[in-house]
Length: 79
Image (cartoon, one colour):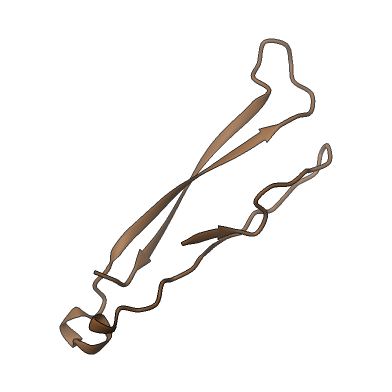
C-alpha cells in the first residue's frame, strides 16, 4: 500500500536525498459506503521500511553500513 519515489540510488559526498512515501488507499468497501452506521470504521495498517546508507569514509572499527528503520502508518477505511 506504500510506495517510495526513490527505491535505490546514489548520493554524492555531502549531498542530500529527499524520499517521499505515498500511501495508495485501496478501493472503498461498498458495504461501508452503503450503511451509515459503518461510516468511518476501519483499521490502521503499518509497514516497516529499512533505509540503508553505505559507502563513503568509514572510520576503523565501525560498521560500513548505517541502517535506519522507518515505520509508515495509515488508516484504511475497511473492515
